Image (tube, rainbow, N blue to C red; front, side, top):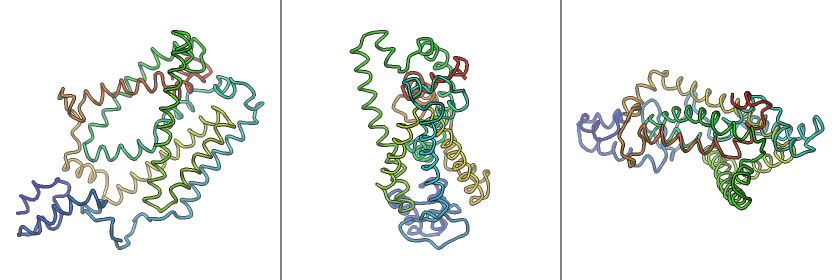
Amino acid sequence: MGAECARAVPPAHARHPACRQPNDSGCAQAQADIREAPREGVVLEAGWLRSLGRPASPRAGAMSDTFSAWDYAVFLGLLLVSAALGVYYAFVDGGQSTEADFLMARRGLTAAPVSLSLAASFMSAVTVLGTPAEVYRFGAAFLLLGVAYALVVIVASEIYMPVFYRLGVTSTHEYLELRFNKQVRLVGTVLFIVQMILYIGIVIYAPALALNQVTGFELWGAVVTTGIVCTFYCSLGGLKAVVWTDVIKTFIMVAGFSSIIIQTSHLQGGLKTIIRHAEEGGRLRFWDFNPSPLQRHTFWTIAIGGTFTWTGIYGVNQSQVQRYLACKTRFQAKL
């Protein structure tokens, strides 16, 4: 009966204790637990499923479900540093006295901070929360998006960036007016504003919701605090404050990712164990060349489709283009 149960449920869960019982009721209960898990919320603990609906006994290395003093220190510290950068760049070197100062940082930035800012600007909470869930449910083929990124870098740096940089425009919408007319520029501007309002609403709400669900941190407190601080440092410090704040956020995100990887590896017995579990669960299938557009993840939908998607972001999206046009030379922008 245990073998039949192993075929009926995902391999990673086939080691549920009930699956080794010699009667049907045990296996049926195991499958019922797994079916109910997405609704209740589960965590994988030493290879078993356990519900988040009931408190579990404390164990060494377990994560707390409330913010500690250090958590608050990091959260508030990031907000204070961001605000301080806005105040600093509002006054240093004459402040933001001209349009070029505020919007383009006097075209004096270098490749390193701009690169980190480009990476951080679209690595939102949607990406951080959604990508692990996507890989867990549908497999690691999603990582082929790295191929798309490589192609996008070439296209953006060799085709789009030289045109914008040579024209010396502040906004990609200026190009629409130069190439067509003012009405086309207005339409493009309005569409971009609507898109960013919807996008920013989601990327602010998502981390606030995650904090609220995991730690009990006040939902609207996180939304309002984050929104006020971001508006404050952007309004005072201009693009320089935005870029250098992104640099700090990038290092914090990398530190957080690294901490999660290290802690998870420790709890699960090493990376080899994690990779073995992923392989048993059928999540390491990368190469699927099925031409059907109805299949969720294939080489064509991820690598080729992703190239077109991200070219629209890194090639012509104002949030990205404004950053690399602020570099001091075309070579720095290409880097």
